[in-house]
Length: 261
Image (cartoon, rainbow, N blue to C red; front, top):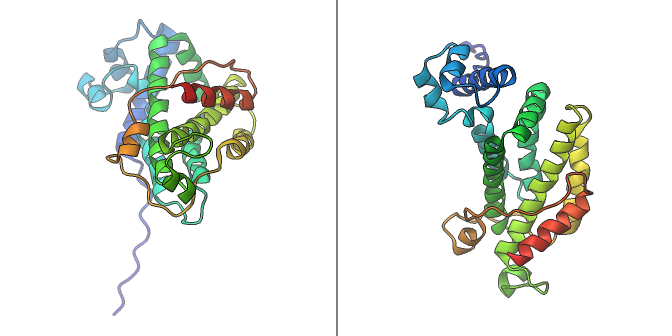
């Protein structure tokens, strides 16, 4: 006798992420009313209705509470890479991966705009944000290292003098920079406008500039390989460009800085 089909269970939100977001919302409200420096962890925990120890189960400091979603977003971006269709250009896959970050910000425009304004005012938070960005760059660099065409792989250094780790890092940095350029412009505009369409136009520039040398269908490089280690270290590239500079100019600044590093 056939068993009756059980109704689908309603979606149960991730309790860990839910609590992290509640703590982050409480922190943001206190920072806005009391100021960042004047707000304590105890006050954040009390505002969220939890004990101090609960706060520290989720965050190591009040700085971390401003960015509750990055760990989960990084995992979602990695899942996009892992599930990429065999025929897809690897650079397109990375562009889809970074869109998980855009979705995180676009899901809560008001909170994202407030957080953006706060990070501009507090250097410690800005440093935390930069550290988060570098995690995405390392993830994408490792992925691209496993997807070079035979001309690059067999020749060591290509005619342009770009070896595999450098090309992967340039391309990954370009994708992340394009994303951040568009995201900052959208946040400065108060979260108004079709930010995904703007991002797609930016990615078209990245593809034209950095889209050669990769091939679909290869396995991603492991973190233990020499090439991956060369391109996925803990260094953070710093380059300078005007925030209102055209994206093409920003891309050229990144490429020049990486060639000199």
